[in-house]
Length: 77
Image (cartoon, rainbow, N blue to C red; front, top):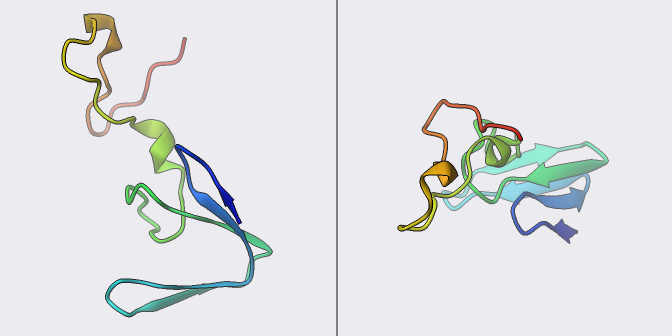
């Protein structure tokens, strides 16, 4: 298992994930990415949604550090 600070948990498969409601989801892939940000539309599997929107900037951040709003793409330098 590999944990990424700002991304998913990478696990060698096959994998079964038991949700907090008791449902079980299974993947037979050789490796899976498990979502930790809960933004994924394929939850519990990561769909890279964590890349599109970062956590809000701390108050007092310079105006150029504006974070993208829901549905906006993050600007690239």
